[in-house]
Amino acid sequence: MCTIELSKRQQQILDIVRDQGPITGEHIADHLGLTRATLRPDLAILTMAGFLEARPRVGYFYAGKKSGQIFGDQLRKMLVREYKAVPINIAENTSVYDAIVMMFMEDVGSIFVVKEGGLLAGVVSRKDLLKVAIGNQDTREVPVTLAMTRMPNIVTVTGDDTVYDAAKKLIDYQIDSCPVVRPVDAAGRNLEVIGRFTKTTIAKVFVELGENREV
Ligand code: ADP
Image (tube, rainbow, N blue to C red; front, side, top):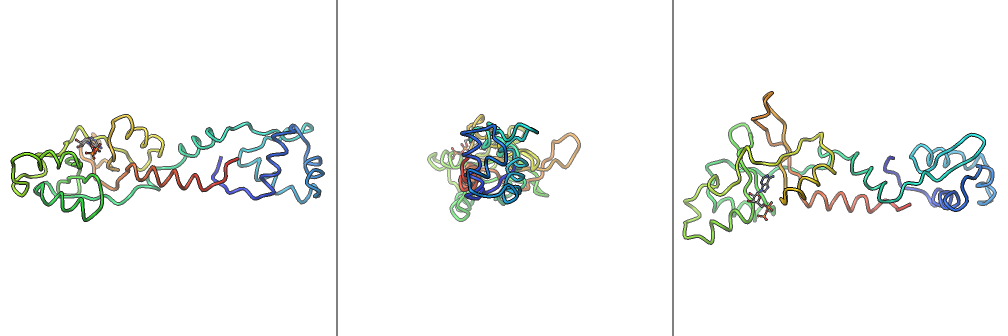
């Protein structure tokens, strides 16, 4: 199933087939007061997109996908690579104070801590920084590495993962964001940070899918 916006006429065809299928192209055309030839492109689109099934000598069937299934199919086709945001990274020697400033300036909820070459060292979130801030330590003196969750305990995704799998990871691990990474060695121990996948990314995908008409 591909992401397409249905025209009014295509919606009408779907309604007719859903109510009356199996039904021939001829009969659909009669219902709409159009010729079979006029409908041919619409029927071809609806069949190719998986909304309808055509059986020779029988006619058109509604393919039976519920909107939930269609939504799921689409999420599994969307790749992290196409939706990831730009990563917000800081170096390991950054102080907790500067990490907090960075969080405000960039308007993000977590920041990735990277080694030389943009290699992932850790993730520091709002709560990690708050913990230091409410302690008795001077946030200017505490390096962010003491506050972060560090490798190899970081949950990551790659550009080839689906949006569904990435979203499921955020839910399963109860985290707000994942670094999008590219392994730079065969063992996958060194990961270059190439993006960010967050709950906001999911909200954007959700809105984008919501803009397509439901069938
Ligand atoms: P918040 O602190 O705003 O609740 P999170 O829920 O993302 O943000 O973070 C909760 C904890 O999980 C923090 O200690 C953080 O360091 C850690 N964390 C955040 N993202 C990841 C990740 N991708 N992999 C592993 N741990 C993470």
